[in-house]
Image 1 (cartoon, rainbow, N blue to C red):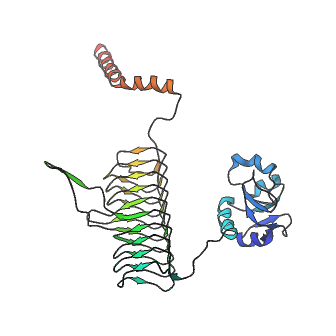
Image 2 (image 1 turned 90 degrees about the horizontal axis):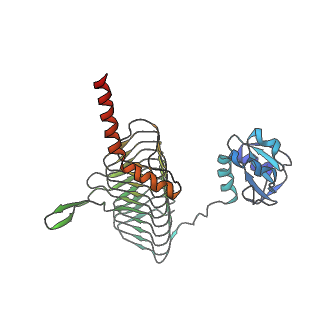
Image 3 (image 1 turned 45 degrees about the horizontal axis):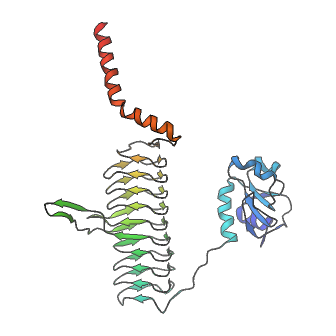
Length: 338
């Protein structure tokens, strides 16, 4: 429970209304009840503020007049909501200690302030720094290092990797698995030894069931501040620049280089051995088949349409080459006649 006045102080915001109103949680404008804080971050929901039952709403200055509750005025209501959420729902930090069922190799180093949950395995020469929290069932392979204040949720598997400070790994993350390197011989496919590692910078977040492969020779590299969503596949020797964000189900093939401050939306596919410049946004389900050398927004693919129309267009698509040749022939004929 916190008063509007105290919350506004934490947010470095002003407010219009009763500062002694108590707030106990956060809810959307439509579902908020008395005692809830809500927020208006997107103008498409501006009508919802008129009927909200929230006790207070985070708004921009120009939207305060329409707010029937206490208006907490912020330059960016969504950013303020993030801060407020941490006030109402603080992270459950674990007390330092090692559970009795954890298995730690004698040559591993585990800082006294770290927390290791049940079933954790720490192999030879691994290093776990200050205030690291490792959830149940995680496997920390030999020579792996994990930087201070990092959090690993349940069942993460790390091998051949160096993890920076303040990392956040969601359940099921796999880092350092062998890359998909095979060569065809007369006797079939033969696996190429993967001897590189994975280097992950500071303040990196990695979503559930995401996989980052070790390099074939040189390491796979993830820069500082990179945010990766669930079920993303990053192949061997990929390099991702600082502060790039990657949404769910993206697949990046081997040796691709992604610049800094990029955004890859959901389902994007990136072909191997190409480069994407800094500041590039790739929209959802786009297939990147060649290098992108300038910042901007890029898209590919056919938007959804009614099936009957799609089938007609698919038939016409097959005739495009023949049509283009006819047009080219006609243009040459016109030039000859003139």
